[in-house]
Length: 496
Ligand code: AHR
Image 1: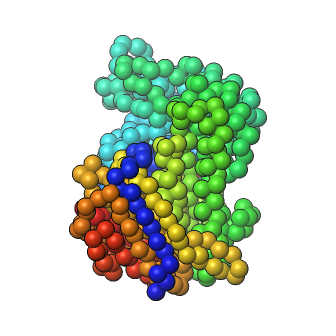
Image 2: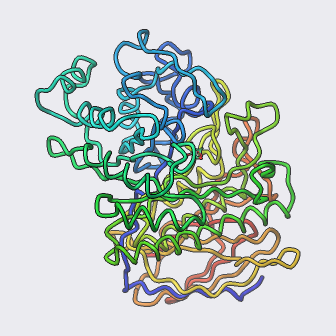
Image 3: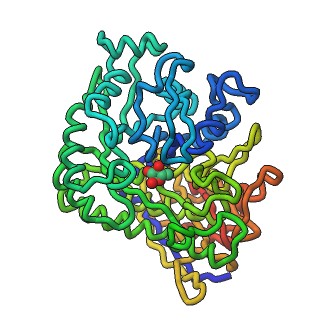
């Protein structure tokens, strides 16, 4: 074992709250994410509640998802909310031009989506249309959903079955407005943002939390212009970052059947999130030193080549232990920056990109990434603890990344939770953790997710190949905790 990893945690110096909303999810009308994955309709043989499949809802509910982003993505800027209300048989058929040119029958509209948020006990994050919609259309959607008084739109909502106005907080104004959302310039979008945001009103005590469309990766100019010109009217600006293992959008790399090279490349690309978040935050600091405006990383995750023999517009991929470690290390980065990052959404919840759940007809499985989100529930709304990490390197063909990544937090009951990842493909790692400022001396919970191969995945025939086990390989003496992590693993451990 390599004992060269040391960690010091200051348990008595909590920094800021890790917003649970960092653990948000994203369900776009894309491929079989919504239709087939979440929604099967009331008449389906697959057991469902009001059209949403029970097995998937039950599994997702256990993750305590804090918010769910909908209806897109790129889809949001061609979505017209009136298409999705009223009797289903009367709803129009549109074409989902971004995702496979398939028919969109609008079976899931506002009322169905809001029902899903109830079933999952989560908050809606509505991504509204700027690219092909009008300020009036957006204003009317807000009124339809949130006005509790007497108006034609509020009454239409009642006619459609929802008496009480819904609580809707998270409201996105455009998505990737520099790309699929309208191919705009930053200054033009900033003008539009102010215009649309002006008419998205707060009704009946509901307060919208308005999220501007930010850029992806390293386009810092967009963030600078939009925050400078419209920052005073926004609560958050988004950042999208997808991990492309090869770094090449044309050939991203496979999601299964790969070796250590592709494993290492994926992890290394994933760690770039730290630089992007840091540098976008630094620009925001210039205009917003008090950090009032959040950075909303509302699309992130690994994006690989589509699985063979699938519609490439459906973005279907497998999910391996590598992807689970991309999730854990990304969440560590977002936690570390949680003084600025207060909202994030992994892309996407079911069957699309880095999903929690895969379905095939009436079967479903939990992916390795699902289990990471389960482990990291301990950090929801917990206080971030300062953590100094001196980690060994994981070197592959002359390139280095840290072998260890971690988050420490303290929850309301005073329990300290650590999530620790060993990124190394072959070497176990010993980590010595000094916990200062605490008399905690008992382990309350410890679980591990690891695998026998860098590309290990769960399949419908073997759904628990990568599944949590109890973690016992530690010693706790006074305030020193020693962890022995096998290669390619992530643990969660509680000390109280
Ligand atoms: O998540 C898939 C797509 O990626 C989203 O629709 C879009 O916003 C991004 O480009």
